[in-house]
Image (cartoon, rainbow, N blue to C red; front, side, top):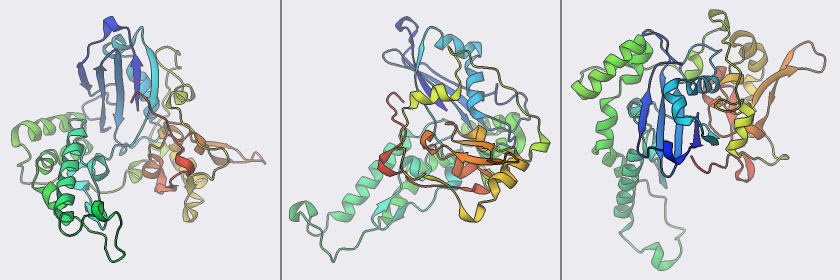
Length: 353
């Protein structure tokens, strides 16, 4: 979850960077919720803030949006925002599996670069540098592959005899670059939090990032899907979140307007329950896990309402609210949502993000 604020110029500190871990996501050294926050001051008088929550959390009552609202009330965060105005809102899933999750990077006619390939360094909460470098490597590899033979720019057309080229050398170039070295250094950090909690994770991350530099002779394997990490509701108590004040904290639908999301009213829903999992929402997600999709969705897309008879709840998908974060296709129990591309290029209209 991330938003941008416009603040009085006298409070602006361009270049100021603040990363935090702890409250409200973690309240003790053994808490295993992976996540933290960022706060950046930017010219001329903007502040970009956000909270990152690992989707392998267990408590189905956790609401990342509400945790974000609570975080803003901390004195060390509040002081940066008071007197300002929230001007934009958005959310997206970060594919921060890192080194262990990097897929095959090439296919005939294309390649995966940057965040699409999973080059985010979760310890730094940074991926722009690896995205730029992977773009450079892909461009150099493509140039080398295409420089032989007649240039398309000269002929103006593609021959029907031409086959799509797979840039196999691009993957080798990435493996030989500092992208590989940087991600390899912190390959075990997320799993350290999952196994040993905040305290153990911090100790291991400090060791790996500053001492061993990734040279430890072991690998902490991660197994299972994020959807499978959610535990039954009977293991937890519902979380009571404070009401928004409309100044520093906001209800979800008020913030959603700041995303500028739009989908044509008459288009088919791009969010669909998989046909072989049609019974999962009402019989499993709602009954066993208290319908976590109602809380992890940052746009209020999923809600359960009484059916016509009033004897049970049924799932309603408000696809027009979707801001394309892709969380539902990852965290919903049994991954029962099939996320497809909407018609007409609909979605959020981010301006200052």
